[in-house]
Length: 117
Image 1 (tube, helix red, strand yellow):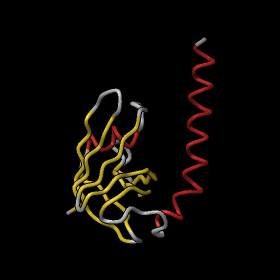
Image 2 (spheres, helix red, strand yellow):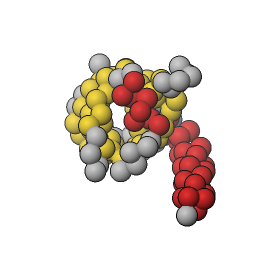
Image 3 (cartoon, rainbow, N blue to C red):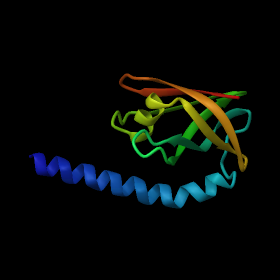
């Protein structure tokens, strides 16, 4: 049973990597970004807690002015763990890099409240 779970986890990771490699360049260019009020796609850039290298992940978000909310049911997402280690993030909006601070709230739906600087 353990090998089946490991194979499923590997398949899930591979699927997300493939999806992100297609979606990320489009969203970085500003396509689908939320307006000052509304929903859309963003690229969130976090610092890897082990490598110290920047990591980018495309996410669906809701924006209200200088506040952006994202969430995931995947509690093992590395980007969540990276934010918990360093809450200073970059949000890519309309082709621009915006510095921000993020706060993770864990639960059945893990949420991240991001405040743009």
